Image (cartoon, rainbow, N blue to C red; front, side):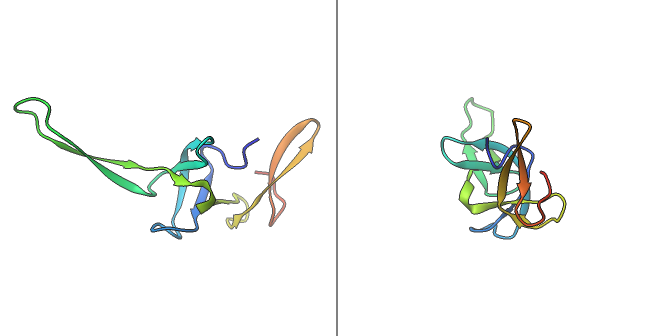
Length: 102
């Protein structure tokens, strides 16, 4: 079971976007990276392909290392580590600070 999943709110702890909050768009478990909405924005320049077509600048959110973000607890709204508890053969995530289920 992953400790951080899609649609979780996270806080960026390290890097140029330190202190910003965002929602996880995509998790890349093999690379230990996540894509967070509005964080680590990059610009990709595309050339014009045909004669009258113009070139473009496309903004996208680049992946950020999983170790650089912390989950925000929905109940206490603080950055927290995630614990996993087993209840009736189901794994549940919980906030280590306030013990609330996530």
